[in-house]
Length: 401
Ligand code: ADP
Ligand code: MG
Image 1 (tube, protein in one colour):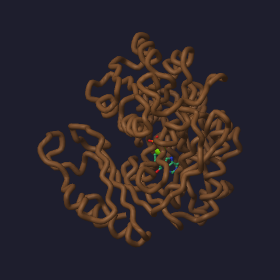
Image 2 (cartoon, rainbow, N blue to C red):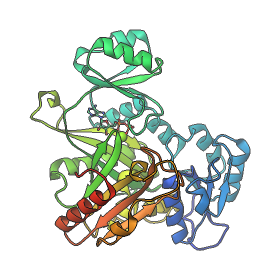
Image 3 (tube, rainbow, N blue to C red):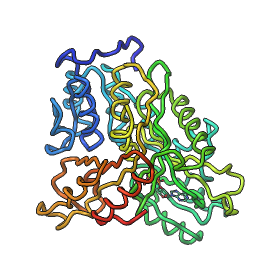
Image 4 (tube, rainbow, N blue to C red):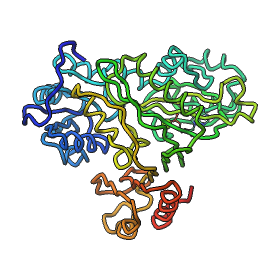
């Protein structure tokens, strides 16, 4: 953030435009939140049909590194954020020459690289899974035996379980690294997980920091499937430690914006968890996150409202969750006639259930694993929310949880 940055005034007209790099669903929901507060918006994304580009006042349709596109975005925007963590850090550096950019290129750059990210966690005193960086054959040969069985992950460009191979022996490890074309990787020890959770924090340029409640996440095939957020969704002690850890990770980066930090709660009855203290950090995303979508219907400020506030330099107030919530991710898998436009899941049946909130991202083509939308379920009690969520899942052909 620039030192002389003054809060932006909502509703002051088209000259107060917030810009976002990336036109996916996260950008779309940011645009909706910004517009609700009276800001104008600009999206840079090469795709003419991008979910965010289609709802924004301005859509600059160029590559993320196109100098003209970046200049146009900077020309119309008062401040610029990102919705997509693999946005080239150099593009953010360019934009930051003339506009406030949050989060900063330096923070996004760290989150883009698993090795740099883990080094940052260690610096902040937050334990992560034991790991080794593998960039050379010598480093491969020097891997400690206790990291096996493990997961080999490319340091860059991995998401939704892509760029990862599970390995048990040294021979498998070597073959896996060859399979990944010997790009820089980290090998992480495979840990016994009791559950996975994540925390969203929002930090302002004045250093103030607020958080959403801790989310409990269920992944299937490496993709988030279900998020549950309510009293008692996970044990209190690791939940409190996760919030404190996420805040120290954000503070350590001098972060401005919304940051999601993912954690593993370990099964401590398993000897492989020994010495790790029961909670380890997995990874972070320098933006709102799929696991925070429940906040749109269950909290008095959504993660996108928080993103708008941090970008505009407006006050951060601790959000309050007013309803227990479950989010079901709606992947292309549940569309009938996948890949064609005929047929939609039985939305009317789902919307007939109390407390269901349907969010679709405006993507015309459904395909396996593609994030098409999400369904939030809220209600007066945890029991009711769970019962409704299970009913909705059944109607949609999503496995029970
Ligand atoms: P992505 O960037 O694809 O989300 P993650 O590093 O979060 O990659 O890994 C995806 C999933 O794989 C995690 O949510 C978790 O279920 C599992 N996983 C990753 N690392 C480990 C580990 N060290 N031990 C056990 N399970 C893991
Ligand atoms: Mg992950």
